[in-house]
Length: 570
Ligand SMILES: Nc1nc2c(c(=O)[nH]1)N[C@H]1C(S)=C(S)[C@@H](COP(=O)(O)OP(=O)(O)OC[C@H]3O[C@@H](n4cnc5c(=O)[nH]c(N)nc54)[C@H](O)[C@@H]3O)O[C@H]1N2
Ligand SMILES: Nc1nc2c(c(=O)[nH]1)N[C@H]1C(S)=C(S)[C@@H](COP(=O)(O)OP(=O)(O)OC[C@H]3O[C@@H](n4cnc5c(=O)[nH]c(N)nc54)[C@H](O)[C@@H]3O)O[C@H]1N2
Ligand code: SF4
Ligand SMILES: [Mo]
Image (cartoon, rainbow, N blue to C red; front, side):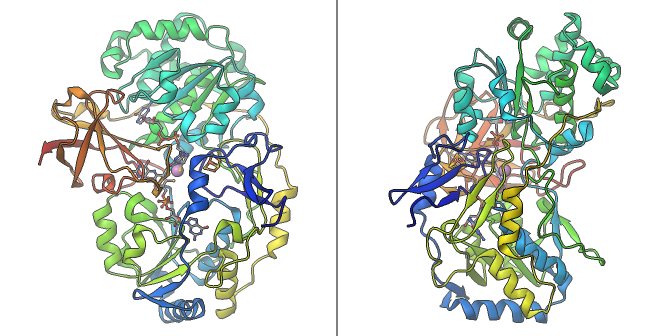
């Protein structure tokens, strides 16, 4: 390994760390502000991964060249719109998009929406257009950090490290690590965060805590929003959210005259009206005037490409067809090209994913032999992140990371850029921008991020709570990230975690069913889980048998938790 060379962690994570080779070891960079010389267990696992070292056709090893020939022959024989290009987030480097340029030019069907942050992102966009986070300095300048539906110390451990001595408030149905370290933990009922946002707004107004100056200068419609919060008696919120009013009082005592940061996560928006829910929370933040200051603000998964020109975009005059990610029916295509994704575990409704994959010609372009490869006709090994040039932007903060080639590429693997270039040549299509030019563009440009000029409050809230149709036997489904896995990669945990009041006990085998499917799980009892919740880590191979392959209200995105469960001993 070449000393001093840099490499970006490619994993889908808020932190986007920068690593470098020091004395033949890969270590966290000291000069990268958030990395601060440390990497995490998932990065260590990534270095130990057993990567694919041979292409495969019908389960037989073949050469890389043969695999590329099969792919291009198959593409030549197919009707372009009957080819689906499906890209996941196994590697978040900017070079991953090179292949999309080919499939756009070719005329393939593409996807829209997200399996991740889409609903919440739209909610923020509706209020203030750009989904961008304040500078990290604002977080350092805050006194109090409200961790709302985010497992802050686990899913962005480096950002957390920078502020770990501050005072925290956590809003989460689960007693997460950060909840245990918080001064106040509001153990909220699932899908009631918009009600809490309205309740907090109501309380703030009663105590004259809104930021009049901010509301005047930067916002529209705060009266409407306040009116919505006044629609029902204050005590009624206590029953539905599960948050005692006394805790709300404590909360205002704590935050009064303090600089407040809200770290908002995925948890609040994994529902049909995810966009509305996040917009209510962002509206509360606006009511308090937390935005556009030099301390505090609201952080979510920002648009990491904001302000950059897309380097691989191809504007197709005859627009490509697009299907919503959560609803993809793989059986409708002659050819399915899956890159950097493991839909058999990570996409909603596993049974329908598997049924669909069985009925089409599946190409997996991936670094590892993941669960989806089992249904692949053709597997093309992608070069590992140590073997390809890349650049990494972050959805958590403003710092970037760079990847140089540390190891020579294994003989039987190919990078995304090279695969795309090969296909373009085969089809006589417009070549990609030069690789180094693209990388220099990202390295040399720092987009300007300005305060927003106008925030529009949400004017109507129309959300169907889950508790409305829940019987006393039903459980809420909660699914969240684990410290030792990165979505479906690395250490898998297939348990269901239940509260001791659930009536089940450790090691019970239970059959869990929903409107969408069923699966068996082994039980672990933990009182960190709220009563009436069934908790599953992301990467659990069976959770998504239970989840809806349907889109949310507006953003074409997944809504993993819009479901009620029945649990019985089996
Ligand atoms: N170690 C590790 N880090 C990761 C990842 C990983 O797999 N492992 N994945 C990365 C990816 S892809 C993403 S998108 C981010 C996501 O990271 P986060 O934004 O932290 O998202 P989650 O872990 O999905 O869920 C966060 C919290 O929401 C809570 N929650 C669930 N339902 C509700 C609700 O109705 N209301 C409230 N208030 N809370 C609720 C859950 O209990 C959980 O603690 O993390 C990234 N970082
Ligand atoms: N039940 C449940 N389901 C969820 C979630 C949840 O919390 N609970 N979280 C959702 C979220 S937030 C997300 S972001 C999605 C993630 O879903 P996916 O994007 O499908 O991510 P993974 O399942 O981690 O699969 C990524 C795959 O990428 C491959 N890969 C890694 N590096 C490279 C590379 O350099 N090149 C190529 N070609 N391939 C590579 C790896 O082999 C790995 O199997 O899952 C969603 N699904
Ligand atoms: S914290 Fe996130 S970005 Fe940093 S090394 Fe770990 S997985 Fe990679
Ligand atoms: Mo994600």
